[in-house]
Length: 304
Image (cartoon, rainbow, N blue to C red):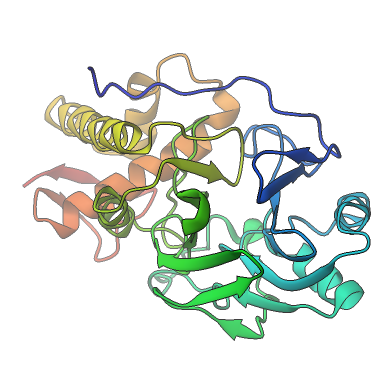
């Protein structure tokens, strides 16, 4: 069986519709669909009677109302957050105010490294700098309820504080934005790190889960095969970047169009960030040289 990555971009349920996915899991999608969020952020309700809500999504009154209606008559014991991007975590504050539940999971937002002089956080608009959890969870920590448990797994890469959560009772992993069936994950320095991302992929390759439920889109139904495909995809992208360097391209702006042929120009900025993440990793490994101490979008690169 080939490990070539196969994305699933089939339609999910419309935003605002509560869907029971399994005996323990319900899903409600926020109305924030777009090029980076697919059909919208997936909020998951885990349990029955006494429940946890994973990734309550953006600061959106309609989505909050939908979540509260979905758990009417139940007790929300935990609000669980995978990472601090504005499509995942800001809704936690209003949900806490409405339910009294503790916010748990990832810690406050932070970049992987200090900003270089003149550098801006590329996804600053996406960062939820106000996130202040009641409890920061580390790998191996758990929250529990009647018939369910959520075990934290550290998966840095997309962000420095990214966590995934295993639901052992259903052999399921809530993978946040680390692994998604509809697309590869954006890794944008200094918010993200390709080296950390690939290390986290290897962490998950050492675990067995029957199903992933990601932060956007439908489930990953063959996790180990999909992870192998992700590794192969990143290696192919790395080879393409090295090929452009050998062809004489020195800047990311020159590499993006031939590497991402057919990509809408509106997405070239995101593609450039992905190339930067790969180059940052290649520089770290001594395979590529950069004319600046901290690799950047405007830096010059050449093979070592």
